[in-house]
Image (cartoon, rainbow, N blue to C red; front, side, top):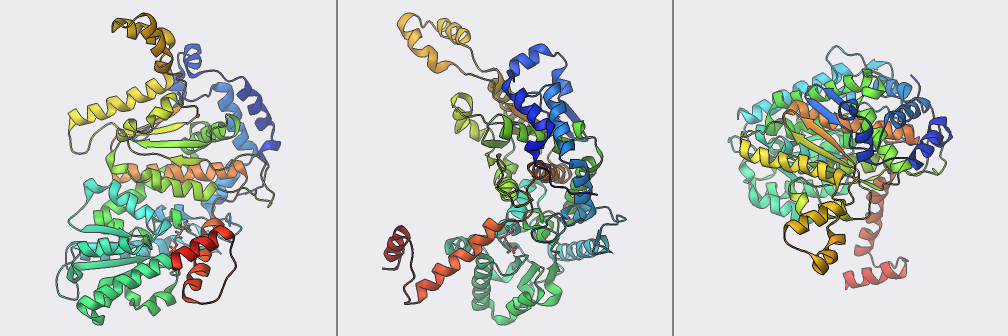
Length: 543
Ligand code: G6Q
């Protein structure tokens, strides 16, 4: 198990890839040259079919990317990641979200102790608690069954549960689940407006239990409940998920209502832990466990499959190829499923927080690009919006298209239309429309002469836009778990290749300190020195 520091630009493969990038061909030309291309550049795994043949990769480029992964020690790093080595070295921690979905008989050690029994003990508690809320045996202080759950958390303590709860909307039970994250008081008030204090359960999620937004929102919610039902009701209406047990006690939440988590799980990778309590409440513990099982299946695929057939590895290497050799700045993620409408926002955190680093693992500023910019919205809505830029703009934007073979509600007519758009877009992005095609089309419409000449340039589509298609059988808790785990491992592989630490987030920590300084100024008379712009804005705000 080794986690070595290798400057990727010093490898033979990197130099090779630079040369290959100079001579890269077009997608059309790749297809013309290789009749087997579609199947050769696809991976068929469980309910997933991943087709990356519409990316600028041929056999030689693929081999060089895989050898880059080997040269930077990906295989050893992968073992270290799963084995509990302290790979988050700047925070002195292992990175073990994979242990949260490991099989019961797994043996994963941190400081010599197997962490798996502890994981299962928390899971058991999640099951018992969520079952009792769902079936109404656990009552509120007013003796009624709960109808609403409000998750209070931010960042990793919000985005994962919120995204999954939306994504599994089809599997939801009768509980209404709400999320409060922003410290904007309008967010908490809008949610409180919708719920009845007598039947509302608050789940306060904060790994550190010191985050300003979460503590402020939880305090406001608690005060609201106390005003409505009295102080004695707090114990029955508040539970917490955290590593900071003393702070929870100080807040007034009883010890039996606390779900623990471990410091070897990063916030943005924590939905598999007790942070997922709101998910278990929304869709029931069986579905929550199926989500974990799906993730575990992807873990096994990633841990054991040779690099060239390994989904997260190949997707990460394609990202590296575009990011470092073909100058793409961003990557679009387009789910063709309304249920997955929060997936791009969730992945923005996972990917950009993890790999938005500019210093390598030796503390030296990198001389190459690292984390790329992630953005996206569901299809077909996005087709009526930013797809214009993808088709005719000047930027290179590799995109992931995520679609499902089967609809959930059985509306085949809708689904055929949805997926017809899905396939047509990836085809059109690649093939574009040539000048000859445009002329022919216009002539067929009876447009000729000057009028035709004027229009032609605007109707040409350059094509050659890369897409990777993830075609999944059906949106189920299991396939969703595998999909999210796939992206988690993609993040890991990219971080290894870029020789950066993917599991700290000093930029986020900075944000937690900055606001406090100005906040104190609001209530003090003391003059603090600021730059001229900030001083002017503060004066205007305070006046
Ligand atoms: C995630 C980040 C960050 C974190 C939030 C909330 O990886 O560290 O998004 O999850 O800042 O932190 P707490 O859970 O400690 O409140």
